[in-house]
Amino acid sequence: MVRPVGERLYYVAVDSQGQWVGVLVFCAAAQYLRHRDQWIGWTHEQRRRRLALVVNHSRFLLLPSRTVPNLGSRLLKLTLGG
Image 1 (spheres, rainbow, N blue to C red):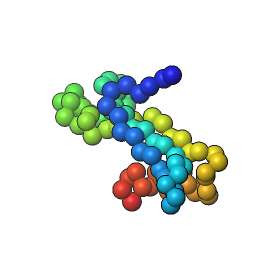
Image 2: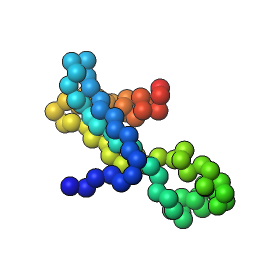
Image 3: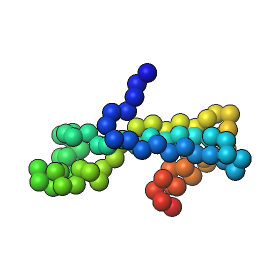
């Protein structure tokens, strides 16, 4: 079984009856990713200070027996605080 490495945050999405409909997992960002850092344009000092603000969305599971139209979009919106 593959497990996320480092710090992680799990969200379990439930319906109005309390039944699981999905799971989302966010992990701490990788320490060094050259292409990410080049794309963002960070200096070494900026990366050191700001890397804790970056997360990796590593898992997104919708249970097929419990899904409804637009469920994935709704869950992603809710994880952003909206």
